[in-house]
Length: 286
Image 1 (cartoon, helix red, strand yellow):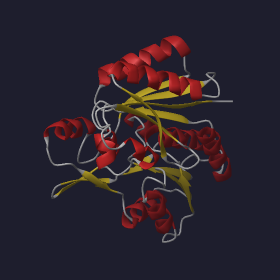
Image 2 (image 1 turned 90 degrees about the vertical axis):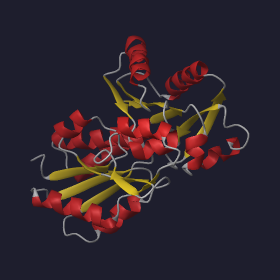
Image 3 (image 1 turned 60 degrees about the vertical axis):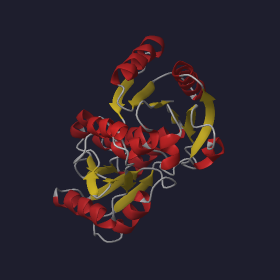
Image 4 (image 1 turned 30 degrees about the horizontal axis):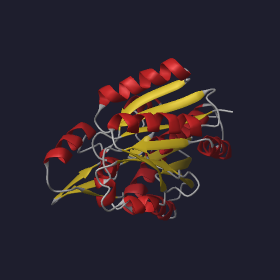
């Protein structure tokens, strides 16, 4: 099957490294960062490194807005104009954003068939599913086969996020079930996970020091995996590349994953996780 027949689309919360976006010809629809009276398309008008530097120094807190129906419609029509006969679009968790609903509504406005997938998570929870879809298309699978491949990855997904403070998660309004931590505990460092059935953030634990937080992140992630065979792992970070690469080196030495990625978390997600955050996201095949 012509791999261009099925177009793979996603949104800018996926955090897939640009080299893989380019390799698999994945189309990314940007969400919007709102900073005062200014609006920036995520990873288009504002890059992550610049975003985190400003986040630390600017007393005004940014907010975000999901891509709208016209953005999704335009992306679908562009894919069709490039020769796609069918589209699969994967979005950030519908429990965290209205992107899934916008994508669904836009799908009803175009002639080309569109399958809309709720990834039930942010960042590389979404990203790994996007890559699974793109690789399934490249392998010649039809839409049903691609969707089955995505489901198989999601069922084994584990994502754990370590933040230096609850401040950004609280102000971003994405604290979900972790709300019990809010109050006098903003000085502690939270560890949260993503429930890939509900798509919600769930509390895991609290740490007093950054070192203990990272150890909790590491142990919780690997303890939660069904297996460490044929492991795909992504290390995401809030502009702390050196620490993320050190963590990746530790993972490589201990577990020898078949795929190990390191990437900076994009602005729309960084609004909630803040600078210095670290996340491990991945799954085992089989």
